[in-house]
Length: 217
Image 1 (cartoon, rainbow, N blue to C red):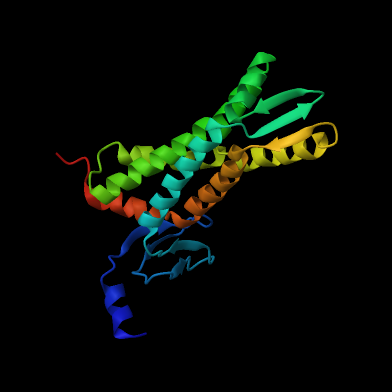
Image 2: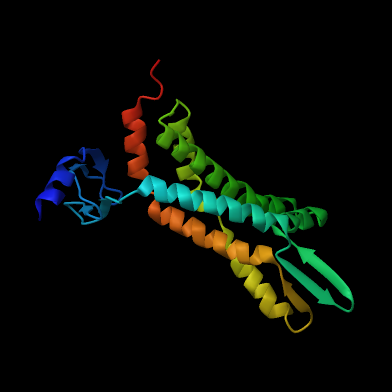
C-alpha cells in the first residue's frame, strides 16, 4: 500500500459502532479506503462498504429517476387497439380503473406502490442529499431518512412492469399493442432506482447527520 493510500485512510474518521444485522454483535468499524468492505468478525456478514462519492452519485441517480418518473406519468404506457377502438393506460389510470370497478383496496395498493411511495422516495432522497451537500441539515432530516428506509420495500415498480409484460404476451394476439414513450421511461426509472439503491450508502448519510448537529440551536 503506497503512502497516498495510507494518507487517504488516515484522513477518514472512524465510523461509529454498528450492530451486525445477522448476529447482532456490536463492533466498531475501522477507517476504510475506497471500495474496502468491513465484515462481521463473528459471522462474516458485510457491515459497511466505503464508496467513493456515494452522496454525489446517489443524488445524480435520484434526480434522473425523478425526471423519468415525471415522464412516465405524463404519457400513456401502453395503448391497445382492437376493432377500431383504442384504449390507453398509464400508471395513475390503472389505479383509477380499479376504483371505477369498486376494487378500492386493490386500487389503493396499486396507487401506493407504483406512485406515492416511489415519488416519496425520490423527492425525499433528493431533499436529504441536497441538505447534506449544502450543510443545511435540520431536525426533520434524520426522521425523514428513517421513514424512507422503512418504506423501501413498498416500491414495487418491478412487479408492475412484470404485470405489463404478462399483459403484452396475453393480449398480443387479440389487439395491436402500441408502446408509449412512458414505457421506455418507466424501464429506465426502474434501472435508476436500482442504481440509486446500490450507490446510496445509508451509513454515509447517518454519519453526515450525526456530525452535523442539525438540531442544535
